[in-house]
Image (cartoon, rainbow, N blue to C red; front, top):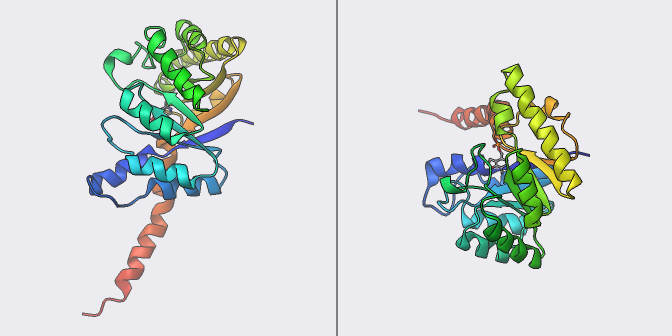
Length: 246
Ligand code: PXP
């Protein structure tokens, strides 16, 4: 069964737009994570960025305490965040690029260009009982590098597929690259996740990619929640206005 990991970063983005610098505020990404779990999500993904743009440290600790499925911590291979992950002990970390020099031309992690640094972090995580995934483009050299690094998973970057979804020729080319990368990874003993830019429209086509274990999806789910949840939110606010007596 293909699993769903919900990325809740965008919930924190909305909170930070109003409450940056404060220790509280809505919407609460942890409350959102618990709702996702309640309806069957298989895991929760949060990206603790070095610039703390959305998810804050307190969020990941609270997630660790509250969620009952798997916590997937997305993170840069940066000393400060590595130290936090080793204490936090998520079930899995997904190493992602945050700085330009860590990025391949297709947008994923340059695993082939950082074999030693990524292997060092992979070993530290595995020694602490944490599985490791590398967010890479569907590029044979990057898949090969992921196997050499010894990560348990790769997460195939579906951004180019999603971006070209409405251009049939390019979209099919991207899909072929994803299919080939998934096959290569599977043959090398890597488990395969995928994510970035997946939505309710483009997801069905991804079913042609073999060996997928889990998809990590954020933006489209949080976006849809805004429209599907808006009527309740407005009704509740109207309810509060009803009691007004001038
Ligand atoms: N996977 C990784 C590694 C990501 O960095 C992101 C974006 O934060 C996602 C999945 C989810 O992408 P989206 O929000 O477009 O669904």
